[in-house]
Amino acid sequence: MEDPKAVVEKAKRLEQLLQRIAAGEPLAEMNEELGFNLDEKELAKAQAKYEAGGGQWEALVDGRYGHAQKIHSGIREWLYSRKEKDKAVRAPQLAREIKEKFKVDVDPGHLNYLLRKRGLTAPPGHPGKPEGVDEEGQDAAAASESVDNAGLFFPGGGEAGPGGDGGA
Image (cartoon, rainbow, N blue to C red):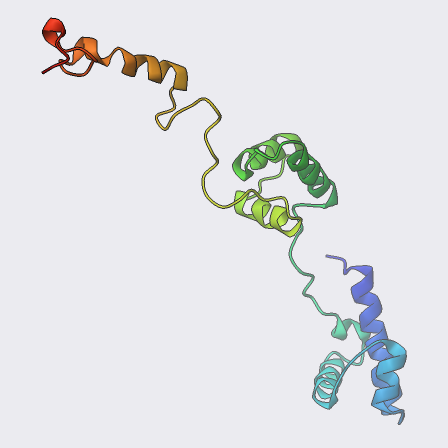
């Protein structure tokens, strides 16, 4: 695998720092000039690594390049605009849409993290019921109608009981 350009440049600058320190230049000046912040201990480690690698800059390459970034800026912008357009849409639905549109699997929890950073998350808890729907998911108008007719099926449930005396 070819090393990223920035990593190669950093290794070459570190090689230059090590060579100039060996020539007698002060560490503080070299740190400032070459963009490092090495202390004596870190300098000793770098020198040992450089010497063990045969005095080649390749020995100074740091092979840690971070995590692969699944959610690139294009997906993030789409995510933010999608959430701004429809505040009711939730992370699992957004994850499905991202998979369909961008062919990228992403955890809904990570989407919530990204949305939270932008202040686009919904309040905690379950989403509220749409207006006109009761706890059982029934239409509120139909529910009140069924209660109004309860006396027909349950004696004493209506205004007038059997015999029209109100159940007394």
